[in-house]
Length: 106
Image (cartoon, rainbow, N blue to C red):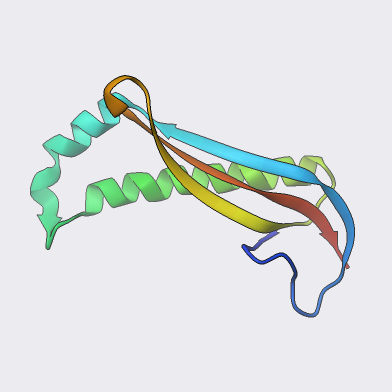
């Protein structure tokens, strides 16, 4: 599945627009407590533990996006937007959401 932030794919023609698709992943409050406990792994102001969790959530969101595009008959997703939102009481959750347009490429 080709997934791109651009609205076209160089050298390929979009033959059908299948619809808007999205994927989401939410990291819960307990995860943040665990991550804060692991802050001793910070080097230069970065937490590799936290970054790994965010990367995993982003990958889950992209997997969901691709599955929904496939279900609509698409073989690519164009115009992808990636968003991060803090949610919940006392901002205890983080949501990673991705959305775009499922298309069929020639």
